[in-house]
Picture 1: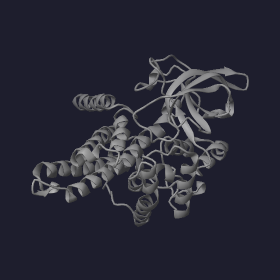
Picture 2: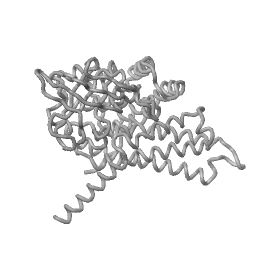
Picture 3: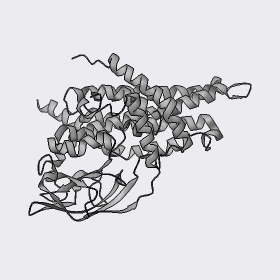
Picture 4: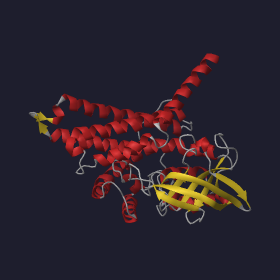
Length: 397
């Protein structure tokens, strides 16, 4: 089967309009706020502008106000939105809301879609995904899940400790992963629950201070203590949470890559402009061989990252699991994007590390991506295991 990576005319036009909106509307707001939207007024203003421009929530279906883009379509549009740190927030495609919308649209009941997906897609509320736990709980190994959900009359009682829950401050609800059977270390037995923010059993503990600051709502430590939810709060089926999480996992890895690729392009553009205008040692900076190598290596990283994203997205659009392709793309992109931004800082010299440019902010924002959504080491381990299993199967066959 041929792999067609060319965006359709409709997608190309949407990407073009997104690029114009980000350039003309979002970047001035980003630069005025050091790349961080700290107030609800900023979020509301940017999202209102995106709605007026007709580019809001492009990933959800038309029934929920979006364009219903497939993964390859998202790649083109999300990269343009990611050209600014605040672009994804403006289009309502930032993590974790974008991934939660994708999963809700795929597996939620009609009632759950009306209660949670519709207002989330409209930007009326935000959400979070409560999975990660302090050691020895779930992290790179989801099977270590320690939070429990126990049957009670009419529903479930959730008890556990979560942290690094992105966007939890101010979220209207959480999707909480809890163990309903088995023990930590076992592959199955997890269930996802929809927990409203006003549930007295879900308690924020603190904002965790991190390198990155641009993800709206921060990274929060949460405690679930006698958190009682009704049976209707179960998302999907009981004990099938890990299986349902796969609906979110691969696509969410790729949309992260798409957004950060936009920032890599932005950093490269800043560096190229500096190299073209800065004169020293009797010539333009960009005419020096070592600087040309930095520029060329970044172009290679950007092109390779885009190709790996599109290949993985094509597999996802074909209904495949794409586990190997998404792991390869995520690992390469997380490291390549860091390299591009780091080279841009180097090319810009003292200006690159100053507050006059946003490159320092970009560097702080992209570094955690080598850890989020699975650290590079975990992905490499999984990639190698699949390769070895394939070899063993070929030998046995």
